[in-house]
Length: 121
Image (tube, rainbow, N blue to C red; front, side):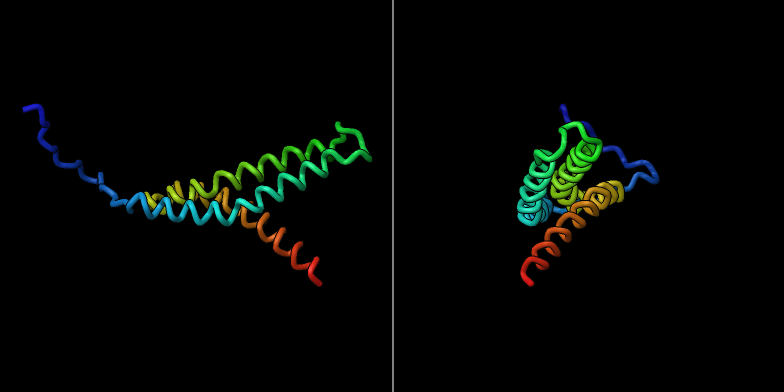
């Protein structure tokens, strides 16, 4: 008799139904497939711009590029996980976090798409 009887939930305490973990995992995996190439391209682009020998390493523009690149790479790494969790749990806060990290990620992806398209013509 170690089982506790289930207590009725308090008014206003609605239990949200969540999707299966498989749905979140599939969305997260698809998002990783989409962002893996832009993550690699962004890190190589930032590394090449920062290590260019024409200016000193401590130039303010290079330091700003390092910090902006770190923020963008963090957003690109966090977006797939946050998106998968938002799909699974269906909570506003998780969708907001996925949106906050997803917007810079989409901007980086669009930058590389348009840069690639401009090189074709």
